[in-house]
Image: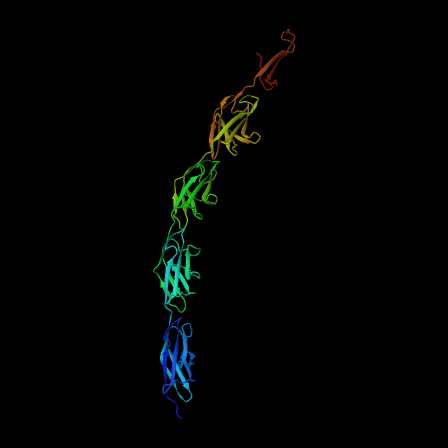
Length: 450
């Protein structure tokens, strides 16, 4: 017996080049010398290092192997197919003339926007990306990202619309104001990666308006207060919350607080505040929030003036006393609302000498005592000057009063112990009773008779 001579013929069902999503059947015809197919043979195809066993197909008379693009054993490149065919009593054959090429699936993208790619800060827009195969079928489970500068966002797959999307203005998807060049990258293993840098996103600051005013008139006394109100809105009048609103006065800065009920920014200024203090002050207001026009306003002033004051003078025992009498001077120093001003400095000046007036809680006034024998001021009629002051309150002087210290009126009563008509050998005593106005004897006086 002799070994039957053989030959081999190859045929690709589709093509010897496939993409990741395609498949092809490799047909191997193992033939006798007369051209008849040899069944029952062992036919293997090796793509190093993997081996596929070809399966006999009675209908086609060929041994067949189907290669799939998704098969990870086949890398993206051209591969030599080493065919080995053998059967007992038949000449075995080895052939490496065929190649199989596997490529990534060609892809395409279509980019669209829900609200265009030119928006203001308060607007939003959704970027949609259609990432498809060569036949137009959507590619799901892909890695789709958009980058701008140092920021990047992953797009999510929307099953309902079969698109990848990202919403610009949602938390974590905010590139900021300006014109942004977008780098869109779509990728999935087995598919051609697409990089598109042709698109931009432009975000403008929202136009705004500012209206500043005082709840009062911006003129307060030391004990009063007024509220500064800033209404910061976008062009359509909608209030802008979450902004930074500052006012600068004489180089010092205050931050206004959001007032939810009125949807404005507010700050209370008290006349007693150390800053800005007494005087007339210009206000420089600035309202700002990311994405909105920063707006200044320098139209307002704040005037803090001394609290108006009044004094009233009362004498406990008249402003005219005699040498042995006493009187108290009480001065009430009070605000425009009638409240007493505590902690003030009051004094009275008489002929260049000062007396400090001290607070008397019983009388509700500042006071001091004068005795008729005090020197100074001494006997006589004296003009008095009352001065009252405290920081933040109007300084007052009152010179309408006077104090008169007079000698005490006296009486004299003369009597004789033995009459005033005596003989040479008799005696009599002159008795002089020198008394104050209240009848009290004056013991330290000088009484002479001439």
